[in-house]
Length: 166
Image (cartoon, rainbow, N blue to C red; front, top):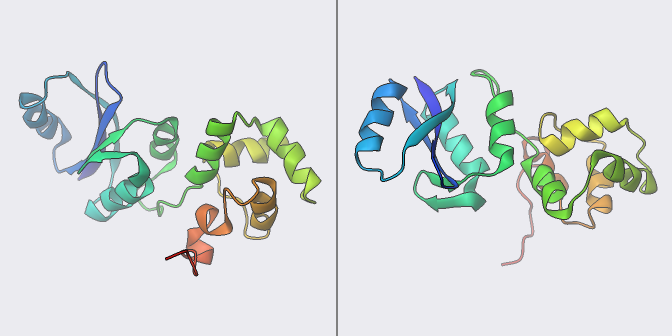
């Protein structure tokens, strides 16, 4: 059983799905798709992991299991293993991409807020390869002026943001 990422060539569309036999599933999908489908990545997993990927990329959803491709997807499928929970700091990676923030620039921003860390660690955070520790998230909140919160970066520790505007 596997989770697959299949991209419709010449588009930005990607299907995140679950199948027992990925090759057979792609053949069935291809029959109804006007674009050539290309398997981007296949990772071992079940329907709960598929649901976790859908939740992770919900803001990029087009329809049902189809999403707009974003660079963070490549990072996510590269680091997820069959027994790991899907907990990645993609909100931080998205913030960096949208604001043109480099590891060196973000390291300097963090230092201005009292957090001194290596540029390599910051690079891993910004690529979504490694989540920041729980003690570092307040500096990240400050450095991003609240655009990325502790709840975004470490929902596995802090849970969903409480008191959200109704």
